[in-house]
Image (cartoon, rainbow, N blue to C red; front, side, top):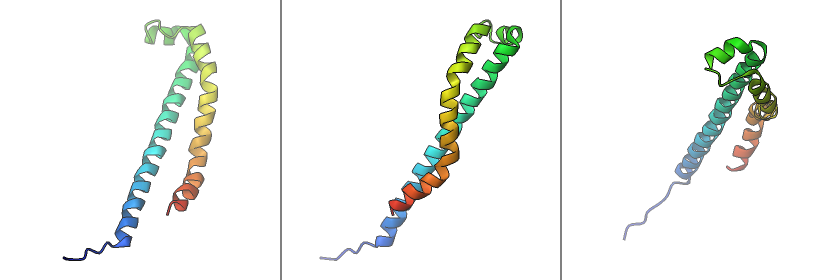
Length: 100
């Protein structure tokens, strides 16, 4: 019977690669959601100030009252994702370093 030796450094590299992939997926997800929220926040803001133009562009879907409600309801998620975007890098260094 032949003895099989496992190189522990290869296992560590596999774990590190999985951690990097997970880190990248989380970072890109936060960025994409923040971009979507920012776009919706800007469009709804224009819907409040330039209601006739936005109403005609959106074919009547985004009226002034709807734009005002959407704009007010997007503030908290926008702030939360902005904080997550800013704080993710330092937090991820601690989390993914602790997993080594």
